[in-house]
Length: 414
Image (cartoon, rainbow, N blue to C red; front, side, top):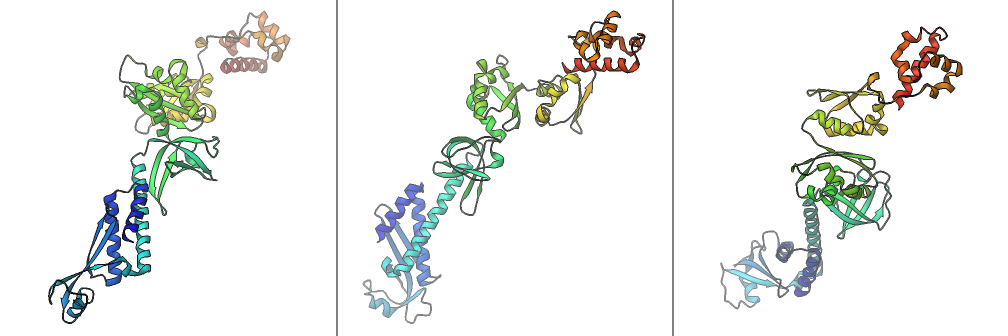
């Protein structure tokens, strides 16, 4: 029975990756508990486990006395003599008795097996916890084996990983059996074992993808200085090259965009803007607000607020769809950004519209009046202004206001 128990648990420990010396310690501890359950808490004992031979030896030590007062630590000389007393021990000496496992009875033996099983499971949980604790922030690859309402369960090296809804990329479609890449975001101890949370929405996942796809980042030649992201929609990554000969943005994008496209595909076509980092917060903010163009920036470092001034035709680009562009720029710079619309100076326009574009809206009569007064384009109308246009007797104030408004709107919408 001894060898069967040791071999069974040695095999289990091997499968679970438990060290042989650790298993030996567990067996000694569990059978020590077994002795105390049978003989009492004060019982002095020794448990010797030989893993190579698959042998367990249990010894109980008691003092030889004439009359037993404490059966946990004492044995009478008569009982010793009844057991043979081959060493001719006397009162006051220690009697060491070898206990056979069968003498403990089936109930205690089964209890010992259960305790061993539980201890090995606990060690296995600790091993899993420590293994994943060491790779927090790193990418793992697993297979989806269950899709639930609020999370997805992923199998990785026979361990269960959880990807909650908030750690998934919105609008991604997951199917059972799909292979998925994510970072280990958090490892915590749960009631039934380690809870390993993985994420595809975390900024660190994007950082690791850049390190995988762009050798210069992996080697440390190019550094990622900041990431702002709305998963599944858009991201901004600020990069800086430590080698002046290497263009940081160009290296990240790659020839014909091949490097950045590999990352975009992994993130379900999430748009990624790679921008040059700068220690000058104004320069960084201008880069982060691209493709929108900024005319001026006022910063308040104490309140971390920025006021930017821009032309009307740039506002939509600065804000982005749903305000995501300015939100990411704010996250990247650490400043709350307010936008002030500025009227573009008429001399700054590098395009114009012929008045014939407005003939259907204004009517042929108004169009002809303007042409006859030598006004051919929208800019000419705006430069003339209301005062000059009011000198044309055929035009009333309401018509002039409409003409000016239409010309301004058309230029600003371009």
